[in-house]
Amino acid sequence: MAVSIQVASEAIALLQNLTFESFDAQTGDEQEEPVESSIPASSEDQPELIAEAIESVEFLKKMMNVLKERDQQILDLHFGLSQGKEWTLEEIGVLLGICKQRVSQIKASALRKLKTDFGDAIEDYLD
Image 1 (cartoon, helix red, strand yellow):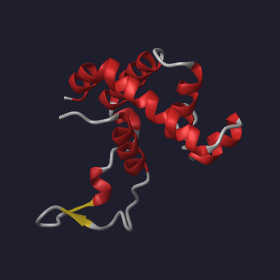
Image 2 (cartoon, helix red, strand yellow):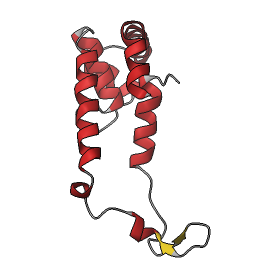
Image 3 (cartoon, helix red, strand yellow):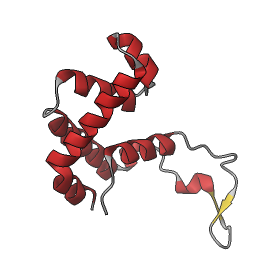
């Protein structure tokens, strides 16, 4: 199953924004355990997740190196890769002095290039 970079980034962003109404809520079919008991105390309890995240960032950096600097900047800002804040196409356009439609075109072109150059590698990586 192939997942585009955009879809993966949007999924990560959605997961980062999840909140629970109450940590005392019950989970499971029999609702025996509170939600709180299923959350790790810290990321230190999940070293494999940290290693996986680092590997993902390194893989993404390698992929981005095939793009022009402006294309890298647009994808970085739009998906919040280095700063954690996702910029709108309009905000990126203001920063670069181009219209948001042009930013959209450049973003689409860069994503197509990544898919063309790394389609199989992305598919293997995500499986």
